[in-house]
Image (tube, rainbow, N blue to C red; front, side, top):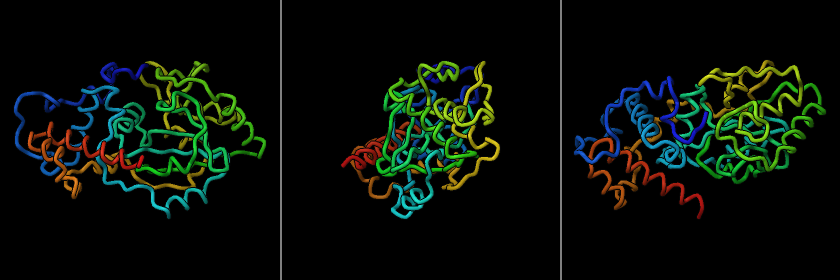
Length: 288
C-alpha cells in the first residue's frame, strides 16, 4: 500500500463516494457557499472528494479550522497526565487530509500515534520529519491539535524501559509510506509503536485491521489493547473535526482579499479554496 496517490486505494469507502462535483474544475459552479447551505455530512463528502482529487497534496494542505490552539490549561492537563511509555494519539485539525485517510482506511478518529519518552519528549515516526525522530511536546502542543493518551498495561518499569529502548533503537530509520508493518527497515507511526508494544511484553495483543490485502495498524488500534487505559481524552470524533472546517466562523478572515476573491468563484470550488487560504494563514501564524 502506497500513499503516493489516494486514487490507488481500491475498494475502499473513499472510492465509493459518489462525486457530486468536479472540484477545481473550470466550468461555472452554482453560486452557493457549501459550508452554509449544505448539510454537514455533505461537507464531509466534499472534503473526501477533494482528498481523492488532490492525492497526497491534500495531506500537506492546511484547511481553516475552528479548533483553537491548545490552551495553557489543556497543555498543563496533558503534561500532568503523561508518564513514560504512554501512547499519544493526536490529530492536527489544520490538516484534514490525514484524518480522512486514517478514517477511511482504518476507521480511526486519530491520525497519529507516538510514545512518550519523558522529560517533555516523545518518540515518533513522522512523514514530515522523514522517519523516526525525537520530538518536543512543547512544540507539538503549540498547534490546533486534539489528543488522547493511552496507558498500556505495563507489568513493570522494566517493561516500560523495553518499549522505550526499542523505540530509541529505531531512531533515524526512514518513514514507511507503504504502510508495510512487516518490514522493520522503515516505519509508519503505528508500526513503530506496535514494535514498542511487542518489545515491552510479548503478550500484548494489538488487533490489526485487514485492509488492501494486508494487516495494517492505525492509531485507534491501540485503544483495543486489552488492559490499556485512556487517561486523557479531548473527545473530538471524526465528524466533529470535519464540521470545524466552517466558513461561517472565519470571522475577520472573510474580508481577506484572497479569501474574498475565492468566495466570488462560488460553489464548492470557491468554498474549498477559501478554506485552504484560511488554513495557510492559520499555519503561517503558528510560525511567527
